[in-house]
Amino acid sequence: MEEKERLIEMVDVGGVEFVKDPVLEKQLENEFVSDVKGGRIYYSKDFYAALYRKIESGMTYEQAYEALGFDLDILGRDRANSAGKRAVQMHKEGKLNRTDPGTYDGSVPREMMGEMSPEEELAYLRARTHYLETLQEAKKKFLSEYAASRSSLNRKKHK
Image (cartoon, rainbow, N blue to C red; front, side, top):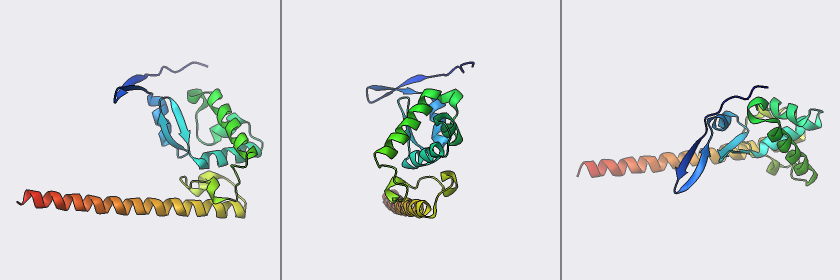
């Protein structure tokens, strides 16, 4: 396998240097990724539930990781295997109770979660509803504060 050349740059943020890797930054487009910092990918709660479901159905860690939209040629097999092991461990520790809405964060659309039992789907949809309601409240707050700041600026201009 030919390794792709990657352009990695160091970014200084408040006196602390961070690695900025455009290849990893592109992973933010995957709905199961919540953040990328310093060469690390942070996954959503939904990711681990979906990954474990695929592993449980007979897929290898790598197959499951790829099925969720991650490129092994770019991200590597070690990352896929680590994520798979983490999902299995979370299940063993009872952190992936698929009928508990707390297992999910609701950040990805339902169709990305794969097959679910009616009980699992209900739990996921409760988490999704909570996520969307929280998002709606944040939007309202933002718009309200934005309107107030615009109004304040307009009053200053007309003085």
